[in-house]
Image (cartoon, rainbow, N blue to C red; front, top):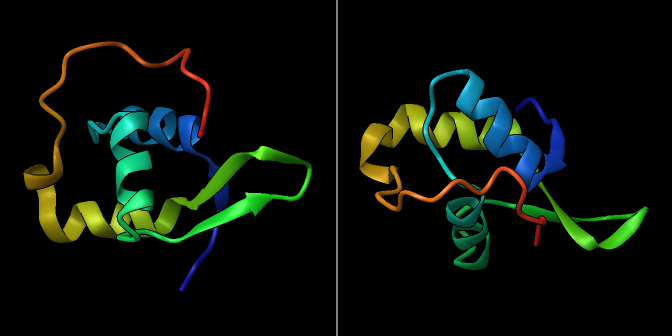
Length: 80
Protein backbone atom coordinates (compact mmCIF):
# COMPACT_ATOMS: atom_id res chain seq x y z
CA UNK A 1 0.00 0.00 0.00
CA UNK A 2 1.25 3.47 -0.86
CA UNK A 3 1.81 5.94 1.92
CA UNK A 4 1.88 9.71 1.99
CA UNK A 5 1.53 11.07 5.51
CA UNK A 6 0.26 14.65 5.66
CA UNK A 7 -1.43 16.87 8.27
CA UNK A 8 -5.22 16.65 8.33
CA UNK A 9 -5.77 20.14 6.93
CA UNK A 10 -3.44 19.44 3.99
CA UNK A 11 -5.24 16.15 3.32
CA UNK A 12 -8.59 17.97 3.25
CA UNK A 13 -7.24 20.59 0.80
CA UNK A 14 -5.70 18.00 -1.53
CA UNK A 15 -8.86 15.90 -1.58
CA UNK A 16 -10.94 19.03 -2.21
CA UNK A 17 -8.73 19.75 -5.24
CA UNK A 18 -9.65 16.25 -6.48
CA UNK A 19 -13.38 17.03 -6.02
CA UNK A 20 -13.62 14.84 -2.92
CA UNK A 21 -15.58 16.87 -0.41
CA UNK A 22 -14.38 16.10 3.10
CA UNK A 23 -13.67 18.57 5.87
CA UNK A 24 -10.75 18.44 8.27
CA UNK A 25 -13.17 17.91 11.14
CA UNK A 26 -14.53 14.78 9.45
CA UNK A 27 -10.99 13.46 8.98
CA UNK A 28 -10.34 14.10 12.67
CA UNK A 29 -13.50 12.18 13.63
CA UNK A 30 -12.47 9.25 11.41
CA UNK A 31 -9.08 9.24 13.15
CA UNK A 32 -10.58 9.45 16.64
CA UNK A 33 -12.88 6.52 15.87
CA UNK A 34 -9.82 4.60 14.55
CA UNK A 35 -11.32 4.21 11.08
CA UNK A 36 -8.13 5.64 9.57
CA UNK A 37 -4.55 5.40 10.78
CA UNK A 38 -2.84 8.36 12.43
CA UNK A 39 0.80 9.09 13.17
CA UNK A 40 2.30 11.75 15.37
CA UNK A 41 4.32 14.39 13.59
CA UNK A 42 7.90 13.97 14.86
CA UNK A 43 8.54 17.69 14.31
CA UNK A 44 5.41 18.97 16.08
CA UNK A 45 3.57 16.83 18.63
CA UNK A 46 0.40 18.93 18.26
CA UNK A 47 -0.12 17.80 14.67
CA UNK A 48 -1.38 14.37 13.67
CA UNK A 49 -0.62 12.97 10.24
CA UNK A 50 -2.97 10.86 8.11
CA UNK A 51 -2.27 8.64 5.13
CA UNK A 52 -3.65 10.43 2.07
CA UNK A 53 -3.86 7.19 0.06
CA UNK A 54 -5.92 5.55 2.82
CA UNK A 55 -8.41 8.45 2.75
CA UNK A 56 -8.72 8.24 -1.04
CA UNK A 57 -9.29 4.47 -0.85
CA UNK A 58 -11.94 4.97 1.82
CA UNK A 59 -13.77 7.44 -0.43
CA UNK A 60 -13.50 5.12 -3.42
CA UNK A 61 -15.06 2.37 -1.32
CA UNK A 62 -17.84 4.38 0.36
CA UNK A 63 -18.23 7.38 -1.94
CA UNK A 64 -20.56 10.17 -0.90
CA UNK A 65 -21.91 8.20 2.05
CA UNK A 66 -18.98 9.64 4.03
CA UNK A 67 -19.60 13.25 2.98
CA UNK A 68 -20.00 15.95 5.58
CA UNK A 69 -23.26 17.87 5.57
CA UNK A 70 -21.85 20.69 7.69
CA UNK A 71 -21.46 23.89 5.72
CA UNK A 72 -18.67 25.89 7.32
CA UNK A 73 -15.30 26.56 5.75
CA UNK A 74 -12.44 25.08 7.77
CA UNK A 75 -9.49 25.77 5.49
CA UNK A 76 -7.87 27.90 8.18
CA UNK A 77 -8.55 25.46 11.05
CA UNK A 78 -5.59 24.12 12.96
CA UNK A 79 -4.98 20.43 12.60
CA UNK A 80 -5.64 18.16 15.58
